[in-house]
Length: 539
Image (cartoon, rainbow, N blue to C red; front, side):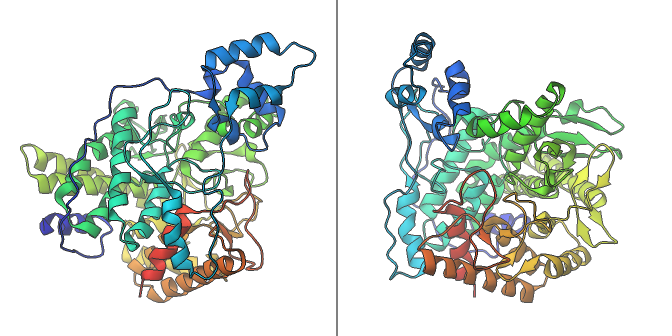
């Protein structure tokens, strides 16, 4: 058993090998028979657009999370017959036929005598959802095991959020809940073919940064169990989702299909994508109204880029915009993101490690294939994304091979966190992060203040963790300690003054609350809690 964990550690992020056993019984990860899924944007007919554009709800996510009280076709028919009445009220119609959602954690009262750490541990039960029951009138995709949600308007599980939440669950001794969440992600891969952005039907056409392999490594390091092998099939299926179409890319470069691209040198890397070029249902009004300011011929590409940016998790940021002042200039699908490809490199090495340990017929050959794929990806990414003059990693425009050097971002820390960078590259990136990105409260994600929430002056827990641990892995323990101290101090200051843990923080002006984005800063908050506990536990 210990051999597996040490093997996985050699290929992943595990800091050491621990012994112990798991007493949890095996769970079935295969999905049950497919059930009907309620898709608000497509099942309600004209009612959906009319509600989303009416302004009844300040947040478009409210309506897609609402539960119809009658079968959706019946509500659509009632609306078609009633809407022409002179006395018709759209708001009254919606209130009569839908059960509206409430914020997650509503009613929770903070005990301000508790420390920040005690407060976070008290929040885990509040943010934990029991296994779901299938409901054909809900946009929620039911999950078979318990899971932790972020909080506030985010009433469902989110893919990349969960890795950072798991850091805190492990620090809290809740590896049982980590295991349940891994089971859920494996279930989603089996049921859908990939891990969606979140377990809602309106998220099915996109994923998020693929942290599943990192989660498996985290769990394996914390528990020392051969049951990490339970996730091998799901890991390979998810990898196939991200690599779908690679074999059909024309040689010679400049080609793309879904999430794969071929660069001009012939190498294959990945990009973010979405399969439905239409407004995001959960942000319908913003997307639709902005698209109306574009010529009709450009709207499909705009929608695709908006939703691909949502898949990136950085929604929104100057990182993806030709003009940081104009969201209509999103070029996300034209870019090879350095962090996405670092994650897939890590996944390929994890799969190889698990195949090697299992040792069945054919496993050695498959492990060799994944190791070769990982090394090919590493060479391609370092050649394409690293600028030796600047000592920094940049996203790349896959058609031309041009590095996006005018929009430096903290995503450059990902090759450090996942171990792709050389020692020299790691030192150079750490120096640049210290010089240009470190602020009084932690690291900023970009050097541009655009008003978008994933830009300066905000700091985000997942990016803080990746940068802090990334520079530490390359010998900059002093920089890691300084950034850790600043971030935790800001977390504690905000908690003392508000009783809240929030999804993002203003790291430049410690007297201000973070802003920007399409919705108010949310309280809760899953990944903030996880990163804070994990950093606080470090000596």
